[in-house]
Length: 284
Length: 339
Image (cartoon, rainbow over all chains, first blue to last red; front, top):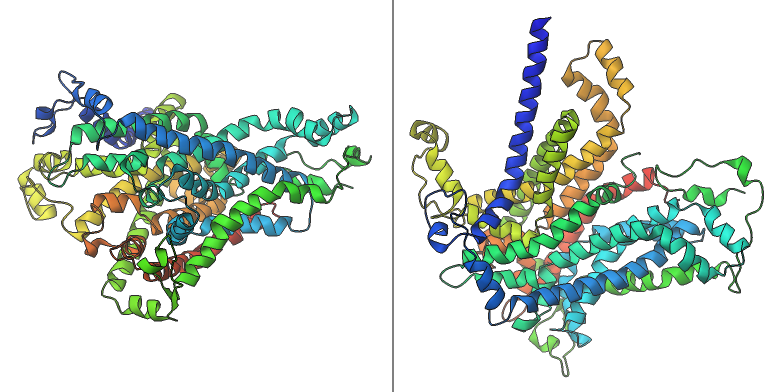
């Protein structure tokens, strides 16, 4: 009896130890990124292991903010990223909400075909469309402009947004809308005043997903832009890498800066993201 | 009739309640005819999907049969592309880079997908066993790895594996010499360059990708585990089932739909890995480390650009992926209410 109890306790300790190991493996690289950003250069370029910046130095953070990189302020790149991501979110969310309402609320002839189309286009790798989208963006005169990135990213994020949002629309009870009709509300009033507020939480989750995808997007940002000052953050990080040496302190400071908004948004929506991605497979 | 209740959301929706549905739903108040409304709502989405996904997909296939270079990319008076039939495909299949790129793509995907799924599942099972506070603590930790943008992932791991100031070489030097020699055949790791050799470069890439993607698998498996009624486990325990048998006979079969989706999603993500490889490899100079997507990019945006060739590689990559992911579409069509 006592033996069994000891074994159980040992098992608990082993499980918790495993939990701590997983935690450390996951968090260490992120911690190291932040720690390196706060280290003076002599603590960065050393073969010794210096676990904490001692004392913390703000030289890299200050330098990144005041001098920027490649002749442009870091704010310029952050602003470019934000402009693209916010435009994609606003336009994409609107289009996604319309399409999600159509498939979740109406029965029509091509409904199933549309849903299958949504699934299939998600299988096509964005990298494969790079070449043709590049030539199209050039032809339409949007090369080297943020608008080109906005347009492309709307296309890349829309199928998943619709797929995710339709479950939220379907979860709003139909009776609520019917009640509004009885009270004499028109179709548009019902949509904006009744359905829209009720779907808002789902819309927020979907929007954060598109925001993160666009904010992180690298390959299109690299190829569709040509002027230093027009690049977004993911590409700007590369400018810290020189021909001969890399400014590790600066690149870590900038990476940290870029990761913070994503991390915040992530903690807000992680549960919804899982349910959206494995939709159908996990039965609630 | 109860036609529209079939669109009830996955899982969370109410089961159809025929008794309440006997009455006719009130008519929608509108001047627009009913049938046109869903099509109007779909229109912007369809234009986006058609113009920004389907048309480019057609264009990339079309370009793969043409020679597209500088003359065709000019802003003023671009010359029409010359039709070259299957030349681009013949060129890539004969290229010295084809087999290495295909091998890198497939081996990397196999290793990364397997490791991600194994580590993710184990962590998911662990999270399910841990107490509430401890599991919350671990989830916050893995969330940090998951949330790190791909560019930052590559940069951080490149720094951890730096030859001179990297933590990994420092840690490997900490190992007792006999152990290090026994396992790796060497004791001194100072200055070990990880990114000069394709195999070690891909080793770092695998660690980076697994590190960033196992949290998603873990959280999904946890969500699946939470949905299995505990009575099943109690019954198994009563029958004296061992933990391994319980996993094989209860957990795995019930989570099978989750796993099949996770496998295919991981394949899609890992098959075309670009950002992390591009950054770890430091661009496109080292051709030995190419996978299909990096090769396609390198050909299309080389100087002078060979867009047709790049397009042909992209088509091969897409073809392979679509064949594999056909399973995913079928799975979802079967379980989801697409009908």
